[in-house]
Length: 265
Length: 93
Ligand SMILES: Nc1ncnc2c1ncn2[C@@H]1O[C@H](COP(=O)(O)OP(=O)(O)OP(=O)(O)O)[C@@H](O)[C@H]1O
Ligand SMILES: [Mg+2]
Image 1 (tube, rainbow over the protein chains, first blue to last red):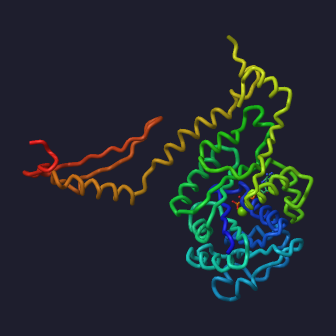
Image 2: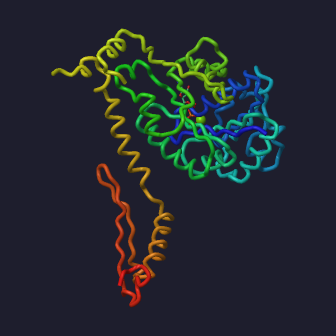
Image 3: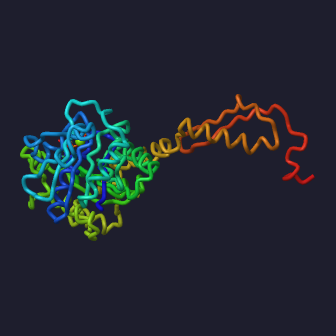
C-alpha cells in the first residue's frame, strides 16, 4: 500500500501546486506509481502545471457524487506512463466534498499507487480539512518571509492536532543573493523557528514560470536549479540521503573573508 | 572597536529583524487557547478545588495574558464557602 502526502502551507501562492506537480513528475521519473490529487476545489490549477488541461473529462466532485469512478476520472500524464492526475472541479462549491469522503477516496487510490500527492488549497478552513483528511504525511511549503513562516507554524499546529505522521518542510523561492546580503531569513532560522525536519530547499528560478507556461514540470528539465532541487527532494522521499545543495555559493570572496574573521552565519 | 559584522554586511540586515519578530509572534500564536481548551481547564480546576472549597462556577475566569516576551495563565476563582473538612486528607492538622 502506498503513502498519501498532503502538500500544504496555510498562506496562498507560496508554491504548493508547483511542488505537487514537480514531486509527482520527479517520483514518477524514478519509477514510482504516482497519483496526484488536486484537492483545491473551485480553483483548478494542477492540470495546468502538468499541461493536462485538455484531457480533463471528470473531476473530484464527479467521483465523490458518484457520477463516475475514480479510475475513470484519472488523467494519464503525457510523458510518464506511471503518473496520473485526479483533477479538481472548477467553479464548484468547495463544500461539495467532506473529509470522510476524501479519506475513503485516498484510501482506495493508495491501494494501487506508491504515492498519492494531495495539492491542498490555501487557508485552514474546509478545503484544508478535506485535503489533509486522507494524508499519512504532510509537506509544508514555506517562503522565506515573515507572514509565510507564521502561517506555516499555524498549519503545523493543526497537522499535529490531527496526528498526521511525518511533517517536513520545503523552503521555496529562496533568493541566495538576498540571503548573502542578510536581507532574507536563512534556512537555519526557518528550521529553528518551525522545529520540523527540512526536506528541501528550492531557489527562486524563473525557469518555473517558463515551465508553467509550457505545462511541463521543471523537475524533468535537467538544466535548471529548481529542477535539480525537486529531483533531490523526490529522492529524499524515497529514503535516499541526498545532501542539501548550498545555493549560497559559499566560496565567494566575501564569505571566505567572513570565515577568516569568524563572522559566520 | 568597529563592528566587523557591519563592515561585511549580513548580520545587520533585515534578516535579523525578521527572525526576532517571528520568535515573538510564534510564542504568542502558539499560546493562544481555544474556547474548548479553556472550558476543559475550567472543569479540571473545579474538579480539583471542589474537594476543599465551594466554587462559584459561573464566576470562574481563565484567561491567557501576553506581554512582550512572556505568556501567563490568569485565573480568578470566586469561592462561596470553605468546606469544614476541607483539605483534611492533605493538610497537616
Ligand atoms: N521557486 C520558484 N521560483 C519562481 N517562481 C515560483 C517558484 N515557486 C513558485 N513560483 C511561482 O509562484 C506562483 C504561485 O505558485 P503556486 O501556484 O504553486 O502556489 P500555490 O501555493 O499552489 O498557490 P495557491 O495557494 O493559490 O494554491 C506561480 O506563478 C509559480 O510559477
Ligand atoms: Mg495551488
